[in-house]
Image (cartoon, rainbow, N blue to C red):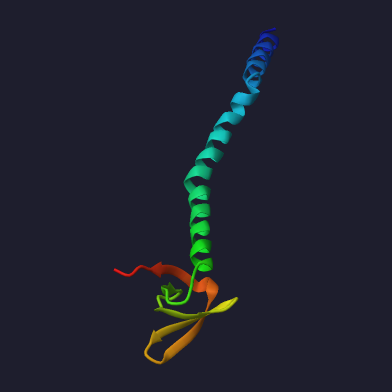
Length: 105
């Protein structure tokens, strides 16, 4: 008899715990929101800024290419940039390797 009463009590407790369906997903929704604002959103902002820098490079700009190569843009083609790094030294770099534009101080 005690086993029957105990099983009914456990069953009633289990049914009460299952009643909060949306409340069970709330921590997961909060976790996804925090993940989005701390990781995904800043990364998307950086990608957008990088695309802007890469697409707005023009002749005469001083830029830093991948690997820390600093030079002045002499020619801009579809996929490459001719970069003057010293007197009479012009190299070609991929347009996507531009990391930032230097401002004249």
